[in-house]
Image (tube, rainbow, N blue to C red; front, side):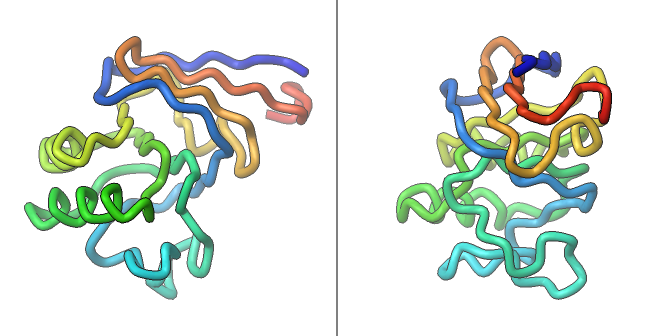
Length: 143
């Protein structure tokens, strides 16, 4: 097993570990999710039908407005949220929402993390350090 380390912008929240759920799609807490059922609900999203609950959610960029804050907060308080949210690029609203919700969050990585990390990989997220460590059973040569 080989560990891969990715560096991003120092983020928000405490360190967490879990399985990755990855897509190159963008992310809106309001329009992409069924926040009650804990699944992606927008039919055109690459993760449609997939549960995000308890996963390290890895997506391309943030979409959405100010409602994102209360939506993420609600999901966290009901234990229906991802463990962490990692984005290639976030907007200030998504960073504020993650902070308000107490959700581990980071962005601006040294590589496109939607290509470097695969669904099912075991991921350690250390947002305060801006580090993501992937312990993958798949060969690094295939990446």
